[in-house]
Length: 188
Image (cartoon, rainbow, N blue to C red):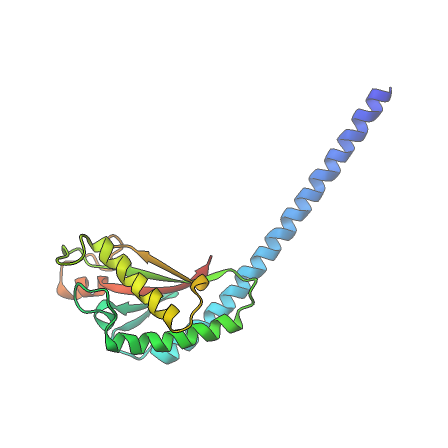
């Protein structure tokens, strides 16, 4: 009888624990959803501001939740050093990112992902592959933004090479569109 009673008490405790775990899981999901919604609101404000600053400039497009800079706006062909015109645009971006860093509460885990992309033509010169060139360009943008005061904890550089084209045709315009730097505000 004592053993039955202990077993029954243990089963009751187990049911209560499972109920608490389910409740904690539901509360955690609500909290995560709120954080995502909060980040979405800041993302919307930030991209609205970037549209005002950069949206009308030639070579810069807004595509969904990303800002897309044609590579020629920032870099000479086959190079990963930001040109003077590109530095002027990155200066504006750095100011907007610093404002964003002040606006977003520190507990929200966000980053600005800088994606480098190339076309599928083989590279010549310094870089052994389009992947290296795209990564070097993304890193150059990140390093430039850091030199202008943007926190490195809020920046990520990624190189995609020629493997994420936005236009698969063979025209010069298609190849030009595929050579780009994309900026995306996202969660860490």
